[in-house]
Length: 157
Image (cartoon, rainbow, N blue to C red; front, side, top):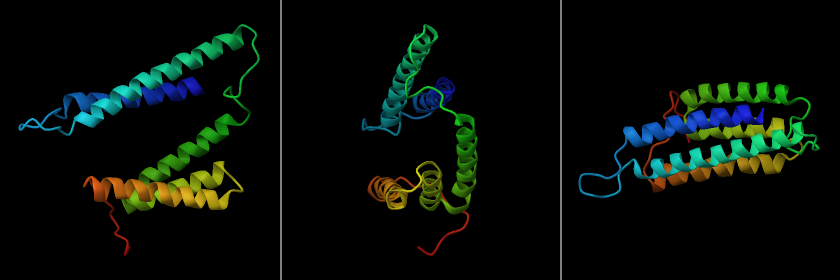
């Protein structure tokens, strides 16, 4: 399951990097840093780190096949159930993203995901679900002046 997930992440990283390298300019006409500067760094780093993680997972898999004891990252019971639950939550997040925009839908998504996968830690889950999207909103929308995904339904706050 880990290798399949990492291959999916690698596919996303390659697509992201393709967009960063071929659709976004590295420098502006005046020679300043362009919109493709940071995405190129992030995309290349994502590809390298994901390849490294895939190689690590393959090495662990070979060790288990040779008779070594399974480690903590090997497939625990119920992994497919958790994967399907997470897939449903992510699909609902995609719908919420279109309906309510970036901030509100991310708070809802993180709240639900943490409630399901991190039970009995309600205060910690609530703080993470509100603080992380709040920090991303402040960083991107206010500080960097990059808009968050728009909403079909605007909320009063």
